[in-house]
Length: 326
Ligand SMILES: NC(=O)c1ccc[n+]([C@@H]2O[C@H](COP(=O)([O-])OP(=O)(O)OC[C@H]3O[C@@H](n4cnc5c(N)ncnc54)[C@H](OP(=O)(O)O)[C@@H]3O)[C@@H](O)[C@H]2O)c1
Image (cartoon, protein in one colour):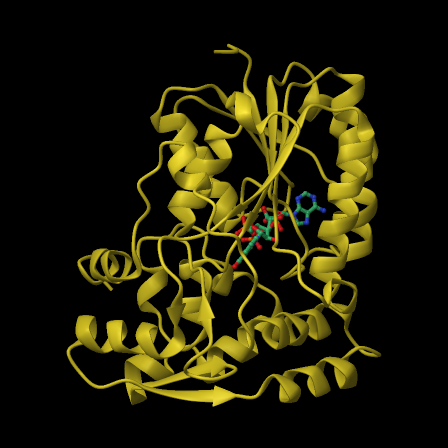
């Protein structure tokens, strides 16, 4: 194993934090890239080197990349703070990051991406992920790309519960982006307080939900796995679950009924169009919900098994959260 540190770009995020924690717990040297404004106190632990850099300030990236044996990149501007935007972070920022990685001969560049849909161009996050993937393939850098299904930790929270965020040091829903905070303030506990799961699409819409701890483990395994050298693979959770089945699991774990209230995809698409002139980031959130109103195509091709990971299923995920203090 390469003794050089693994650089985590996006280390203060929800997934990034889990990657740092898992690398440190495994005794692997890890360099966590944070911004001066990042909430990162929880990352301070033995074995974790903190480096300050910003994808919007290319001159800072050399110091982050120098001496890195591999890079795992999760940074994104879905819930933007401190001036981040898709253009600045996911587009130009990743170009600058790849250049710095090439200049400093970093090892494999591991990217977390999203599934390919027929509408990628219509939603900023999906559009920029495709752009990064293409640039990475053309960059000459050794790389691995994992296109993950929807995260249980995020989507199970966004449909109306605080349960999935228990024990999480950096949940997405806590990011200080006013639009997100208003949304979470209005709907964040609909399941917990009223037994209503507010979902994009129908109760029958299915997704390959995956737990963040499994995504983190897969990205770490992708650093060294020979089959993933310059490969792109889908990363599906253990089962295709409908929103109705997710609501039934909440009901089982909470011990009271939970019903699904579906919002048609067309409503999100309309909101995306209305918000676009005012906020690309808010429009992106609506676009993500529009895409999630139909099943996201994630191949069930055994990537987790290939990487030696036994995934957490949704029941165990919720049960383990319920066992933690609120
Ligand atoms: N949620 C899903 O269902 C899903 C599914 C498939 C793939 N994914 C992908 O998985 C990843 C999720 O990562 P996550 O949960 O860690 O995201 P997150 O919680 O939203 O965190 C975003 C991270 O990006 C960093 N960042 C933003 N602007 C930056 C800049 N200018 N320079 C450097 N870093 C910057 C943030 O740093 P600050 O703290 O300083 O802002 C933070 O560390 C994303 O790439 C997403 O596209 C998600």
